[in-house]
Structures are given as structure tokens and as C-alpha cells.
Image: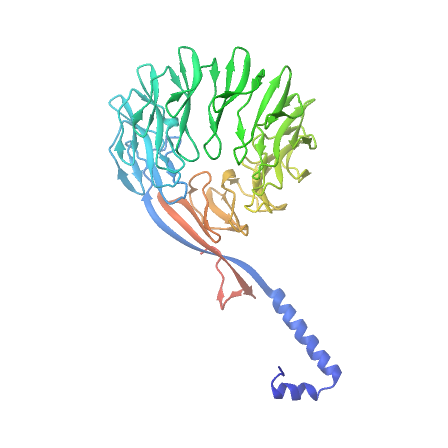
Amino acid sequence: MRPPTFIYLFFNNLPEKIIKLCLFIIFIYTSIIALAEEKILTRVVSERLIAKANYSPWLSEPLKTSPDSKRVAQIGYKQFLILDGKVVGRQYDNIGTPIFSPNGKRIAYAAESMGKQFVVTDGIEGKRYDIVREESITFSPDSMRIAYVAGIGNKRFVVVDNVEGTRYDAIGMPVFSPDSVSFAYPAEQNGKQFVVINGIEDKYYDEASNPVFSPYGNRIAYAARSGDKWFLVVNGKEQKKYDGVGTPTFSPDGKRLTYIAQLGEKQFVIIGGKPDNEYDLIISNPIFSSDGKKVAYIAQEFNRQFVVVNGVPEYAYDAIDGTSLKFSPDGRRVAYSAQLRGKWKVVVDGVGGKLYDVIGEGSPIFSPDGSRIAYTCQVNDRWLLVVDGVEGKYYDNIAEYSVTFSPDCKYVAYTASLDDKWFVVVNNKEGRKYDEIIGDENIIFESNNLIRYVAERNEFIYIVEERLKWDYQIGGYNNGEFSNNNN
């Protein structure tokens, strides 16, 4: 297609040198305009007032948010529950920390009145007992069932869906299978220990540990001791005996097991029934990659610690944080924090980063696709976030477990504080300031560009939602208006 006639005639009658000069000027101008464009993150904030803060400040966890950060529970000064700003249930002599179901729609807590203890679920009181173990209250993964440990006199039993189990001398923590169909717990009677699965006692042993379900709920394993030998029991079948064994871990498909074992002075990892190399000490429980093809753990030899991936040891350090070892979601990469000459660094795929005074708990964090990595660290009592090797701003504090990537991996958000105020930082842009951002893992990505969190300001509690978007700004203007990144 030819250009308009007047443009064609204009350029057709110009000398070649003039035409080239004009084209060069046009190229320079468009390049300058392109460079002048600045990509600006705009945060459109909406706050929804939930309640006035009315909780007991002396409690360890007076405020609790639901997993999706859509609901807030607080224990009032006079020991009653306030849910989403409304008083729920009666006033009691004492109330435990509220527990939300995984879907955030149900809530339960232990309460005490007139010397008796009971569980209140969705506002309905359960049967009263001499004791209820508050820390044992648990919802099933599908949020439909609830279990807890209660006691009458010196006997303990598990209550599942308001049905009491057999009474024993002692009981451990109940656990539901991932499909919510089965439940199990360790128990003790007359000096012998055993695991109870769906109300049926397994074999008695001298000791029995907490049971672990496979991802699909069709297998269950636990460690047991008979005499001086330890072994795993998998679906009722005893495995090979050792001087000691650790907690079992199932592969993602549930077909393989890995755990720590000990013979004599040496420890090693069992993977699919086969022992790996022997070491002086195994520091961390072995973990599977998401595809089940790799197993990693931390070992120690001659007072030096190192990560072993599929039987191959990596570089040895003075120490490795046993809780930091993790695979990326796609299973291709492995990362952890390690200490060298008194300083700490993050190691990714065997390559160490910059040394810092401290690497924060919960770090490192992979993005959902495994392509990016972030971690919190401390330098001279100041905290910062490092994303893909690039350091962010220094703050007084960073909530270490708040770091999270958006589902599309384009945004990274975390909670930080400066001068006694807390705010959410997204891609290095600070948000509105609050007296507190509530919760540990307190930022939820509802979608790729929508975050939610719960905050407190001037004794009022808000659910805050922010819509994120990128705009292009030229010369300080954004679509004809000044850009405001925090509104």
C-alpha cells in the first residue's frame, strides 16, 4: 500500500541526502520517546472495615485470620469470640486460639466454663470434659470433619465428628488423611504404644510414633520400636529393623518412602527400601522433588555439612539450615541457606550467593514456575529482600514468612516495617502504612494482579485488597494524569 499522495510527492521531490536525514531524525525522536517511557506499578487500594480491635493483649494469638484472609477472629477482653466484627457465642471463663478450617468458612476453639472444657465449632458447644487439648483441634483437609483430644479423669480419647473413641492412658495428635476419609493417632495403654486407624488398633509396640498418610490416603506409615530395634510399619507390615529410624516421607505418587536410619555409629537415608551412603549424621529429613525423581537431604561428615541430591554430595559448609532445604515446584532446582565463616548465604543449584549476617526463616522461596527465587536477609540489624540476586530496600523488619510470588511470577510481595509502621511491598513499591499487618503468611494473591491482607490502623481492623497494574509514564505523566503508586 502506497503512502498518501502528498507525502509521496513531498519525499519523491527531495534529494536523497535530505530523505536520509529526515528518516534519521524520526528514528532518534522515536527512540527518545521510547526511553522516556517509564513502567510504573499502580496499586489501586480498597479497604473494608471489619471491626474495632477489641482483643485481649495478653494472649499469645489474640487475632487470627482465615487462610484466604477474608475473615478475622479475635478474643475479646471478657473471653468471647469476635468474628468479622460480631460477637459469636457466649462469654466464657477462658478461650483458646481460634482455628479456621482450610477453606476459611468454619471456625473452632477450646473454651472453659465452670471448671469444664469443651470445643465450640461454628458457634455450637460440644460436650464438656475435664480437659480438652487445645493444640489437638484439627479440621480435615476438605473442612467437613473435625477432631480433637479430650479427657475424663486420667483417661484420654479422640473425639471425631462428636463421636468419642476408645479411652486410653495417653494419646498423641490425631491426623486426617489427605482425602479426609481416614484418621489416625498414636495411643498408649498399660505401657504399650500403638497407632489407631479409623478406630481400629494396630499392633502393640514398646514405642510408636505419629502416623503419616500417603498423598492419596491409601497408605499409612509410622516408626515403631520393639526391644532395642526400630523399624517402619507400612500398612501394618513391619520393615527392616535398625538401631534407629526417623519420620517417614512419601513420594508425591505415594509409591515410595524415604526416611533416616541408623546402624551403629553411622546414619543413612533409605529411599524406596534401598540405603543411600553412610554419614556421621543426617541433619534433615529427606525430601522428594515434585516429580518424585529426586531426593535431597543434609548430611554431616567431619563436622562439615552438605546437601546430598540423588546420592551426590554438594559443597561442604560450616552449617546448613535444616529447615531451608527445598526443591523448586517443578522439581528441577534445589536451594538452601548455608553458613561459611560466620556468615550465611543462599545456595541455588550448587552456586552460592552473597554472604549476609542472617538468612531469614522460611527462606529461600521459589516462584510457582521455579524460575525465580527470593529470600530475606539481615545486615547490621536491618532487613532486606533479595530477588533473583538483586537487593531491595533496607527495613527495620520483614515478616519472614510473608514473602510470596503471584501465580504468574511477575510480582513478589512481602510485609515490612519502618519507623514503627507496617506496609506491603510489591516489586519494591511500598503500600499504605498500618500499625500492623496481621498474620504470618499474611499476603494472599487472589489472582495474578489482586492481593489481599488484613491490617490494623488506629485500633480498627481492615481487609485490604489491592489491584496491581503496570502503566507507562512519559515525562512524569500517566495517561494525562500524575501517577500515584500507593492509591
